[in-house]
Length: 179
Image 1: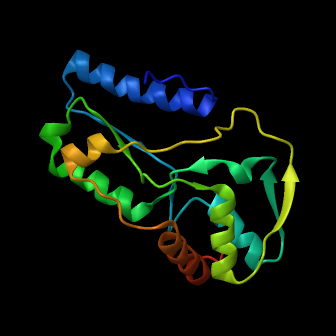
Image 2: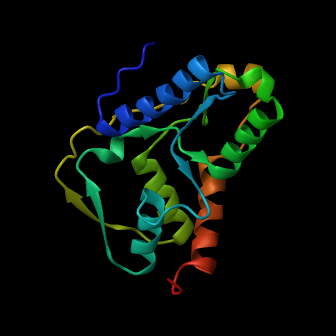
């Protein structure tokens, strides 16, 4: 399907990807592009969904969430699976030059499911405050990884539960009460 992003974020991602590909076509720079899908895990930026959620639950503070976003579906992909995919690109760089790969998991979950997993891990409910809908939010993104599977042998293995358990553990030991 030809890319047709509807958000400014998506437009900038596509523009960057095409800039790299143009430089490859024009100058012969041996490059490829990896599209990373909803990466989460240890060392995730603090303003992202899961660190904000974990912090709000641990500190008994409100968690702002945009109206309707609990139903948004994402291919939330554990950082370790992404690193594995990128390592496979480097190992097979000759086969990857000029290519575009989706790196993510084929399993999508809703934001609401992710929130419930975190609540279950922490044994406590989030205090959600619903904000007005945010313009440009995608209702669903899903990684189609057939190309990465066939050319790279890419096969993500971490379930959302497993990855979120690792992120919560890391957050509690490395961030909570320290930052």
